[in-house]
View 1 (cartoon, rainbow, N blue to C red):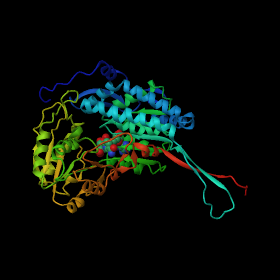
View 2: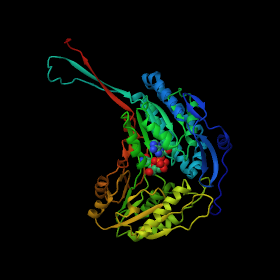
View 3: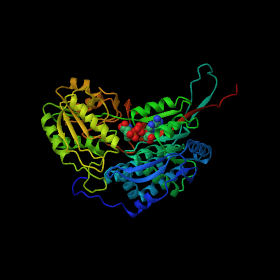
View 4: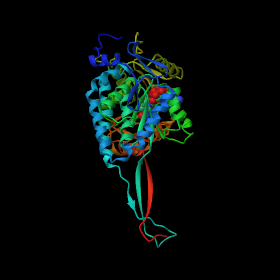
Length: 503
Ligand code: NAD
């Protein structure tokens, strides 16, 4: 582990949580998982952190049946005030545990503690409060239809906005508090019920969310929390006839499997998938601001974030300045245990993920990319990997095409907008992107050309509960957050009312 950047000890609350029994929450009861044991590792130390037991397929059935019963009861029928109040109490309970959740997220997936706090506060607590407000504002509309064949009748149409049903939520390991809240809060505000499967590589913050739900007096069956592996519990959820919708965040490969498995009952599917997002720097950009921003657009979370700006298109007039600036910025980023105060880049989640990233570095070198920065190997324990910067990358190289999910940034030089436009959408992904320029016409023109769910102008990766978030092409289906994030859990029923003479 690098240098004198020493980790702080977890709090007493965190240690007590780690020592506690990690049961599943099914129908409001804490029960032992009857499936396989999942040994959770601290990726910064390669030491055991906790053990959780996966749910069995029978326990998944019980959770789905309880979610169905809860859906048929008061939860989905009452006005939204009760749901809004429960969500606000849930947010309060998470806020009370915020420091424990942040520490557990850091120990579980390696994120720097400051990032874990940000994710829990701004992506979880704020999102839950935002949707608590929406719960009382769900409404249909009414209008007079044009009934062509029956001009003498008098009709009114009222549309009802109804919950989509029992939702299965499957989340990844990289920012679980945010990923869980972005599904759970709008689904529950809409009157749905939810069965969550945590990520097997980082299941523990999901456990704390379930504890917060119970503390908040959340009704039984409305929210179930299961642990389990993707290939058994995850796959069974995707195929489950009792689940009406899967809300998934994860890789494009698994997203495709979920779509196929969902065909049995044609359940609805929303997908937040991978990315290979472009960052574009024009010569008239404020380069001093763009350099650290482009560096962090990729290296934040050690590159383990879906919105990573891992393809950097730099105009030739500022190319060398930007490459040298990013190499210097990235070389100064402290790599280490997320519990250490100076850490900016935590470890890779697993030995497997580290090896995968290293194999991409070798592929890029083999394909002729030039190494502008490669950090020295960092001795274990801990799956550490320093930032890597490639210049001379050409569109079509594998390092330019495939999601690495690690601290590897590829710089592509461009000279004119026509050439840029041809390359910018040249991958299968369309999640995010950013444009750096002081010219408003250039900014808006290029932002419009980027085929992605969100794009920043002189900012990368901005998110808020109010702002829709999602991917185009193979980065996903649908949007989370904002009004659209709520609509994703509602269906419309049109009721035609005869207010004229009876036929
Ligand atoms: P992953 O796809 O391997 O796993 C995600 C979840 O899917 C896990 O809970 C896993 O258990 C489950 N799963 C695995 N196989 C399954 C199957 N056959 N059926 C059902 N569920 C299954 O992804 P990961 O490694 O946990 O996360 C990294 C990926 O997530 C990256 O591709 C990243 O870009 C993406 N991601 C996307 C967003 C977004 O909002 N677009 C956010 C974070 C991460």
